[in-house]
Length: 114
Length: 110
Image 1 (cartoon, rainbow over the protein chains, first blue to last red):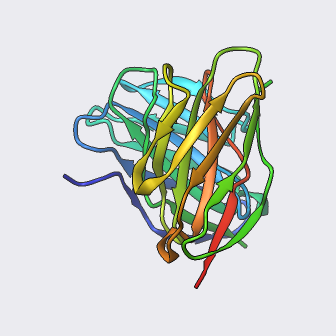
Image 2: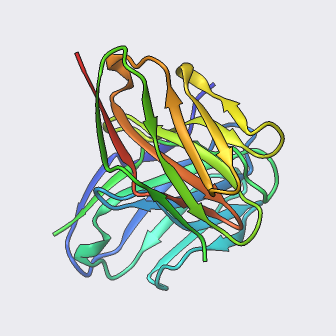
């Protein structure tokens, strides 16, 4: 079975631009979470979606938004990019409900803002 | 507020030697605890988790960890490391969401 997939793998954007990152969960998984991992730090929680509804939000500005589609794939959007948004963005899927005990991570999208 | 502290940012160890990676957490409520490994240019892989029950949990690749509630610790151990264990290791707690530590870079020296 395929694991969590993310696209694109790398992305370079300019300050002020907008970006959309995509994630496909493991087949059968209904919950998707997004994390930001700045170089040298651990992942920081951004959003969790379950059954197309937002179930959790981390301490990120409104420039960050996400959605989940009927096939449980998800998109993370970031508007008005700042240099500080440069990071590895990780998507994780889990199978059971809104309570996620075991998450499976994708390889991430490396975003560079210049 | 929840926080996770990984006490060592870098741990060098010789091949076949034992290793301990330390993790402390702060929480006023019951937590679930996890260790993840991240190889270069890859996502995170779950090594082991503590949800309840026995405080000694065994994971993949010969790793184990012990939950100590009184010391609010969840240290990761392996009795004999291999070159392939060189990676970044993250401790995490789950309360309402996941909180990760800043990571420990384990380097196994031949």
